[in-house]
View (cartoon, rainbow, N blue to C red):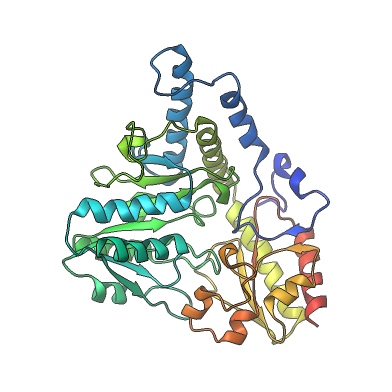
Length: 392
């Protein structure tokens, strides 16, 4: 394992001269190699991939290649990858698509309390618009779903279970293979929002047993505005956009080939990082940051989420005696979050931490420090020093 990122990713121009970036779970800086992948599609290769003439051939080939790259990263087959414009859209296609395709008068959907709003709000809409029954499972103090709770909630009308791979605030990794086996035993499908997991840890759709899985570009160094949904062969979904039949008829509209090329490149680079030991490098940096904080603020630093079963890049801690948003306001040399980016600035207890049973004081004290490709030991030293000084 190297002490620093590979030489070609030692720095990022967007981070130069700015605060130490510890908000990779909110979004990742766009890797310059994505721009290279996009450039030709934005200039010479302008054709419509659906066109049969020469100008459509190379964009069509680029689209096919990107599909192969994303599929390879998650152990899928290329024709099982459907490109969308965001993770939220991919989640909508999975949940609404499965519920409507089931054709049942009162379809049952199961999710869990710490899901991203893209899942929870879609479930609320399915209940309001289509009469779906929605069960929201609780989580334990570590943020994990108890498979026994899912087993008790499943019934003959359950169409879909949707449980995220990794939590965006705590990094908690859910027991997906166990949950998938339970769902399948009752004839239900399992969808997994893997926005935070893909690229950070090994994700294999066969090993997980999932039927649907969401991949998000801007969580893995591609630009915003591109995502994908793995749809296992044989799974029936109602389209999310109707029209010309693109993306297996599930998401009509002329494809954004430039962004799909970027997502494909991101998938290739993520596979390379995983093979080169990037998760271990980030784990070491994360744990060093945790130790420095605990040593500098003895007895005041409390980990939120599981100690072991979490993403290698994510540290969510509460520091006694200081509010999270006040701590970050006092450390302008850092860019981090008090929780999910979707809740920034609200200064109310995080719904994720509340669902885990944390009291309001501890939840309001929480800060999420998430690392990534350009994080270095020097960043960790700067962050720890600044946080300790502000919290004293």
